[in-house]
Image 1 (cartoon, one colour):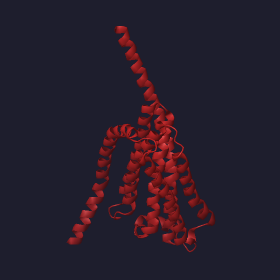
Image 2 (image 1 turned 180 degrees about the vertical axis):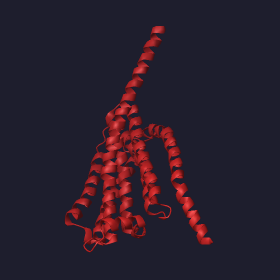
Image 3 (image 1 turned 135 degrees about the horizontal axis):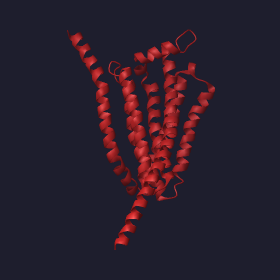
Image 4 (image 1 turned 30 degrees about the vertical axis):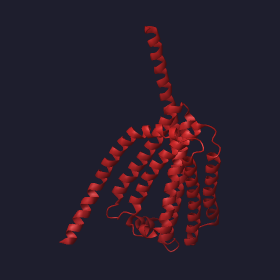
Length: 293
């Protein structure tokens, strides 16, 4: 009787979870759309050039880049049968190069507006980081009886939509305030690099410290059986390690920096258009007011 009740409760959770997550995500998106512009509009005003907050954010990014490079080397050491010398050299080097870019761009700020762009981008990146961490945790740490393929599809699609919304709205709001499209690009770049680095670090930690979560997942086992099982294929752990390794790099450079910059450019263009229309309306009202007088 207890086993029957347990099976019924699990099936009920699996059937209700996608609808519940969709409803909560929709409400979160509406709240985000309402309150994110307020947060973004106030963030640059409380952070001045050379402030402790900006330096702390820069050093966190640098620390995350170095930690990710170390974890990459650890994966090559733990799973040598699936590695190559070229990947062993290029992957950590790309993270160190990224750390150099963060150091150079973070120390070459010339105006308070640029400081504001980067603080807004890091603020948006923090929100995106929580979304990605929730997605990664749900897909890999939650029990497979709850984290089914259907539930993961809902979580994945909603997470992508929310991240894209945060990036493009934050870039547009910042561009409306400054009237410069490069503000939107800067916001997109910094939100992408910070959220992508958080997702990359989480993925690498999952391989080095949470491999047992990956091995217990029946969806991972099915994928391995279909793609890589065989006499000449790698072991299950090695296959999952380097699949997660690739996913972490894609999250950082493609989903993070690439998508963030593209959405920042689009949001900046939208913001500049809205700023132009706003200024035009203000000038028209001012002209009409003087004519009435």
